[in-house]
Amino acid sequence: MRQSIDAIVDQGLKAVEDDELQQATELLEEATKLGGENHVRVLHLTGMLAWAEGRPEHAAGYLMQAADAGGTDPNVYLDCAECLLISDQDLDEAEAAARTVLTLEGADQDAIDQARLLLAQIRLADDDTEEALELLDGISDERKQDSVYLSTHGFVLLNAGKAVASLRKAVAADPEDPDVHYWLAQAQAETADVAGATASMLEVLRLDEAEHEGHDHEPLTGEIEEDLRSQFEGVLEELPEPVLKLVANAPITVQARAKVEQVKAGADPRSAVIFLGKPQTDDDEAHLTGIVIMRDLLLDEIAEDDDIPELLLVSLIDELRRFFGLEGLEMASGEE
Image 1 (spheres, rainbow, N blue to C red):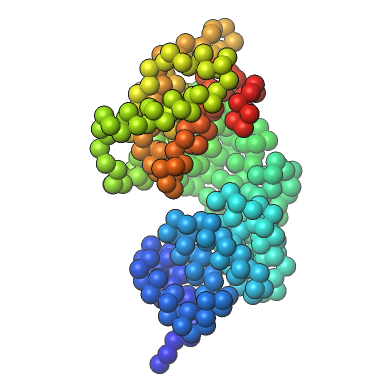
Image 2 (image 1 turned 180 degrees about the vertical axis):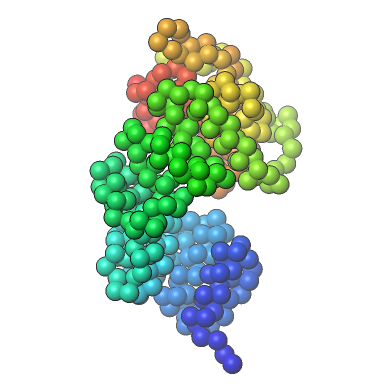
């Protein structure tokens, strides 16, 4: 008996979720033969497969087409909104997709809660902490007990300066989520809990290493290190002269990831660039003894090698702000 297009697409989406991408591709081909490439469910599966394959821009295009088709499946709109948000694309389109779920007849409470979570994250990305909290308050009491809600709520509160308690609950609910530990570390740093922030960052390092264990990165060689140093020196040339003088004489080294002792000394385990030495304090000037580039972290974060300079620049600016207290340093202009 021939399966319906809905049954085939459901199997395809489950295959994507299970990371069985070859099976998902075969099911997509079968669904396309039945409904055509512009069928709303085919567009949905095509988008989710593209996303799983690491092509977020293509995925967003397919998912927006699926959302524009005006179907009644809330998952189409939720996936569209999440893809646009996570890949930092069109937040207005992401918000429109998520808000559609709130008006869908037949959308269950779980879908509405997911939409509110996404909308809270979208409003936060637009610096609207107040509405983000209002959206979270409207979520069902049952959903407020899970780690996704707790971490989102904690992250919103982090931006409002009162996040530690909520993020501790999120960590307790899902202790294996490195992102929640990372947000907790940031909140602890904001409240001057240096020991707590360090402990949380060490947990981030442990969990990130476990998650990326087995990634097939070639061993570091002198040639690779020299290439990364050369690219980083090119990034340094974009700094204004007064800022460049702060780092110009520091030796540059390359390693796979941050080390425990570096994190204990204040390094961010998720930064592609870290400064070694003593950072600026109210009482003492900064003393920079070295700069380290994290090769594996770069490779985990980029889509292609051409993205390396941009990520190096972002990380460099963040470290300049942290280490030298240059809070007004802007990436776009390179001016304080």
